[in-house]
Image 1 (cartoon, helix red, strand yellow):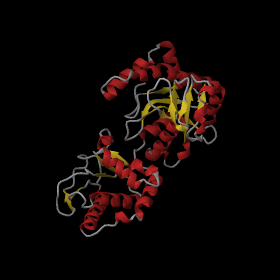
Image 2: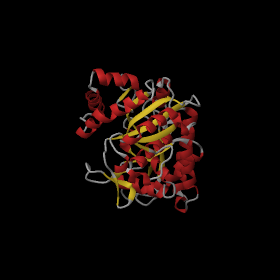
Image 3: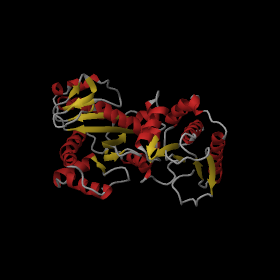
Image 4: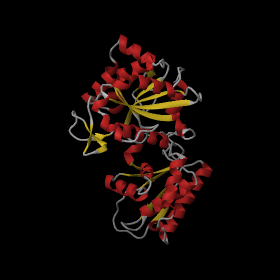
Length: 373
């Protein structure tokens, strides 16, 4: 089965994929073809080797555990990022009967040790530079997925994560376990294959997972209400976000446009102009905070890496998860129409101009722009 959406390279049940691998032996070739079609360039050789070795290891484990009907979403792209989870397993929870998802990070490593007694950073012989501990890596993928996939908002506990080091003996990677393990970040090695199978059975039933996979792939990409609530609290009382004079006028103009767009179901564009230091970004943060308090899904975007990092640092100083709401323009190149209610585009540059002013542009036709406001 070819990719079922914009977010992955391949989707198939574990049993079907196992048969394909056994009979055809061309899984890596098929994934490479899909990758080239999707991204416009060939995958790195190391990635192809991983597909050849790691995905069959996971597939065989699922079949051995009696979970052949579980859906495997291979190379699932995390929304609005260039990051990809190796595999997401979609199925039914054996106790609740509700959709259940396991994010799997696959490693071919045979050896890995903490760097300078820091278990979050790993030294792997085949890599020149330290890499992130896979327990923390998969935990981050889970947290991010829950923050932006609408299908998971009502049941965030349906997502768990695991790193499967299928070539590693426990003794040669034991130092990685200094990182705390929990339901979204844990690790199994080759020595723990039986325990890994038990873990899979504890999260997935021997039932078809196609419907759960459909739910995940078809869900809206939007910040979760929990993430928006945290962000709203972060900007609520910050002194540097107090708006004065023209700043307040620009803010009110933007908020009025949002309300009008919501009532009329027609898109609105508001352009806020002003020179450096005039407070455009202060207005942007104030708008975001107010929108989040109202439960309106919104994101901030800019084309500047340094500026985006600064905004993330300011807005997410105490709550790192808030940093996920600050993206780059190219994060939205393949976004679906109307995924986000409001997109705040902050260019972070400009020549010397008068204090910020807001100009409301004529509404766009319903399908002329991706965003409602």
